[in-house]
Length: 368
Ligand code: COI
Image (cartoon, rainbow, N blue to C red; front, side, top):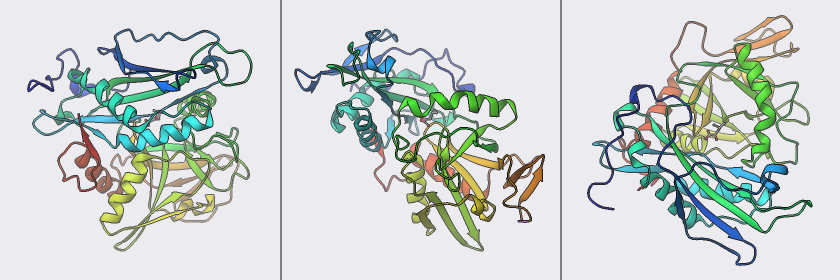
């Protein structure tokens, strides 16, 4: 790349208020696969944000689609850009693609595509000082016409990018447990990042937002006894007894392997904290001193409280209150807008590494 790279951020965006909406940029990257050649085509930069897909494509009719989410940041001095752990997202996309019978995108092609998408839209990577990021959204689809329920002849791999702030914001958020609806069947697609795990949640998360709950939490769909994940992000429970800190994450076949959660688990271990990956019973919620939602878009969201309707299982325990037949475990009381101590420590270190303010001893930053 020439020495003028990266260009400065555009001055058409209020960088102090980037938000989480779709903004048009210069273009996206595409690669096409045909069963005849058995290969993904060379990467192509396309300026039109609308893609060309047959109306009978299984992506549109049968949900043969998977996606990823990762981020790029400007480093101190604004003269370098790095992408956070694209290798992990590359392998997660392969995992998801297998569920929906899409040929795997090779890891090298994935990394080259996200680098190219960021480089060719570099003026939309937010200034380092804002702490905001360029969000990267790779996608795969079955793209050619196919009426019968069998894999089509052609597939598309696209990488879109856009500047974003953090999803859910930075204040504590109230969570509602989804009792009326299950996100994924016990032996189903829960660990795959496919649209089919998200679209059915929309009406429930919208309803919950209308009732004051910024995020929804899913329990295991077989018995509703163990914690799976938030609709938008992974679950982390924090146990703090004196100086001893343990991060507890669900061991479930129905959750997405969150790169943010994995990263803060490694950061926690590096701090000398314990990490437990195990089944988390609903009854354990009052034991946690903090609960965090971890995801690329959200980074780490401090959970203010978790409410379950039509339940009185936790009655009498510390942190638990009941009203109208529902019970609520509170971690951060109303009026307190600050994240907990452990959330702040993990977030500072995570953002420090992502933004190049802290040594990258794990090798997580991939420079563009
Ligand atoms: C992400 O965190 O990157 C996701 O894909 C979640 C999405 C609901 C915004």
